[in-house]
Image (tube, rainbow, N blue to C red; front, side):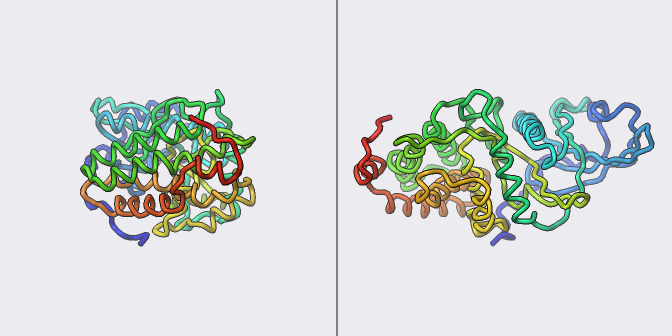
Length: 349
């Protein structure tokens, strides 16, 4: 399933924009950089990516990584990625390429770019123990600057803007994020009565049931810096250091367990063993018995975002429908029913 094609459209960004180095890109490189060549590198559904090979004034020959997008959505993609990668770099510099700049081509104001150091990577998944320890380290070190959930700028997963408005409560933040993603998915795939009903019931019952207990009854969580899109396509192993490297970030300050959502689908190569290893380094939030269902809920929002990305491909919508049915069957009485069962005074929000 991991190799199944979900999108077979041509990349809208012309390859011509990575056949030479635009002067505004060159201006962000070290002074007196000589360009030796620029070559396509990597794969993307929505952008063009390339390796820029150079020679610097000191005689060294580093490469740089260039990502090119277009239109206002593309501008938001690269600006959000730059701020995200810079925030990750400031928190955990040994785990990410060095972000250098984002900007707009001098030769075409509709073409935008993201520039960072080039890290040669293997084709292998990162070592499970090294990766889980490094991800936990990121979450432990990355505290919200204002104690709230959200992020300082809009970020995008693929071409879809994420909800980033600063919010005091995790339940409220995630609920708004879910509603935002629900609306975008419906606009992309069309209205479906069953899908809308299940989403509304999930908002009414499942989200309060699984998230309100995190912040009530003496239990607490803190907003932690997350990469926001951790799956096997956005992480690898650096050839030089044999250490995990993460890239293509869409950051949030969130419940740290949100980071683990893309590790749930069996279609991915990094799956539940990585989640299990992670919890050896970062404790499961209380109530611990809810962890797997929280993971399913978080993955639901992630899959709904995937559905929005691929108009006409209803595969992800069908997955979402089945997940919501399962969660609603497991939690038919919502948060209030759970609180009564646990002998806790329900908290009304």
